[in-house]
Length: 254
Image (cartoon, rainbow, N blue to C red):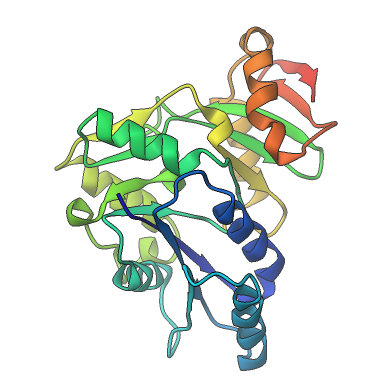
């Protein structure tokens, strides 16, 4: 199945954009494309972002530059409109994606015969203190991290383009509407597939990420029991020296 990975970014986030694109290049699933929508910024900076993507030398990475200002929901719809795949995968620019992410989410969706899947467990990396937390989203309204949505294109609703959720929370809004009418499989136990990064310039405040670590993180005891698997799963990210912590304190250091 052809998978279209969709990224919305800004010219000033060029370094993160290229890091995310390189993570996409390293994916094990072969039949895929990456659509990158570059929003706002001076024309010269947007041109530089397009050139940086072109320098990767991949015909299956395509840049899209909107004609004018659009809400985040409209930008995401624009990326979907340019996609050619049978499945859509949200590919955020500031997070870390394991080489098996596409393959594992596609397999989970197919095996569950679901319209979509999302990761119930992800890792949260707080860059300034260099800490990692295993977050379990099962008890949240989404049932998983909304930014990890992987969906059959013909079953996916449109993002809202107006109102408050079109500017922030557009992925959760779409997910809730999707879950109301389709089977969405919560993929549990593979947090290494996606590392959610706090870097100081996120769309949500650092306090929100601290709250996630407090409310959704599993315990240090569970982390220690799962240490070997976590070490292996996180190895591709080069986070040596980071402290892996539960809601109740440090468990081990990578």
